[in-house]
Length: 294
Image (tube, rainbow, N blue to C red; front, top):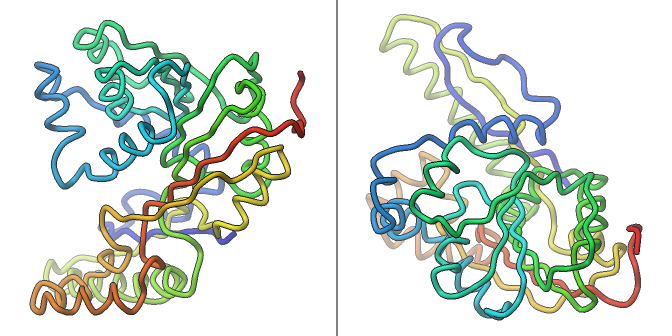
């Protein structure tokens, strides 16, 4: 596991100067950003904006994964549902899903007007225990906010929500910890940010600063599998894909790829799944109990 930082350019002393010490609290605070917009005018507009299209490719991958590893008759709990776009699309296909998040986003009232059948609850996956009444749990883009201690707690608590043999279908969020992501996160991207800030400062004739924020954690697949195993889960399946390859986060590479499209194909050939930012994992609850009340 490695701390994962992102870099932002801000004018003068505006904003936060240091990284967030508690990334879990920082990410949960971002839920206030689920604003209501014209896409809430109809169910069709909602799915067009928040599920369909190339910008939402990962949600389409999540939907297909849920259909492969869950049945319409399953009782499903989604953890970290956010706007619930994937979950509502599954619900439209006949799946029974209870959505949840740390707190209720501002958009949920408007969402329920479009989808009256939406079931949403506030749930802290690191402190609350369930009654083993779910067949499956969906968790997409949540686990990257956890360090190892919280990651183990997550699996312990999720086990308490699942029936024996129940499944977790998850994507940790972001590419794995490896030499490529380490080079991007710790060398190339902060260097690019400093260069861009310096050029912007000269152009606008006012100071610019690079702000480093703690975005989450990079975890290796094997480390996640080990944490799950300690809580009584076996790995059933593992798949990788990408909505946008990790090296596209580099402005330098983006310019190179746009100028010479073959460069991106070459990068895929060289780095393969190292750059994949969708890592689907499916776990099955075994007879070996975790640290949760039976």
